Image (cartoon, rainbow, N blue to C red; front, side):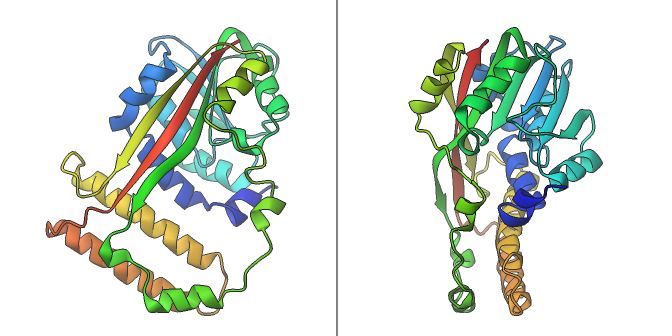
Length: 282
């Protein structure tokens, strides 16, 4: 049983909620143009490193005729996905040793996986399991922007709490997180170097601004709750005896943010993510 990622890097709910927002249907047109897949075809799609399943869930909605399979090494992610997402086959599996026969899938897709996996294995295994003419889609998070609501700025209690937490040795490095980072020019070049052709690139700009009128009230509050979950998880991960007190502070701040939103008192906090999409063919 492998639970390293969900217990030491990103928790299940934090990852699911953030990805659910980024793969909301309102953003599909941006992905659709670059994916360039036939929505009416009976495609066999494999997501690699699916986490709790938000992208696979979106692919099932966006390509209703397709059969979607999704794998991840983390047992907690796969258990969550199996319990909460219908219409997708979830299973545990390793990106460097895909448990499938050669020439099995029409499409492979991954989101923020490339930077954690040796390029030869990452691209090579996808070429192996893709059918001739199959499509490889690699999504990679790029630098975005973030602006915090005034009511969510760190309090003195929070600052003191974090100052009291012993600094750990670089745990992410020990866990092989982001060992193979690549620039916007290096990702498509790496795809070509590993045998893919007709490589193209595009970008999806995901604007998560709760106070923007284009967002429904439900969507806006989901954005705020996703931020709350991220902050709560950060506190809980410290396993500090004083975490409970800080959790109360965090919840009070987010309750206030929700109140301000519902009363129309705009904060204009925002998180804008940029996702690079690289597409290649076998």
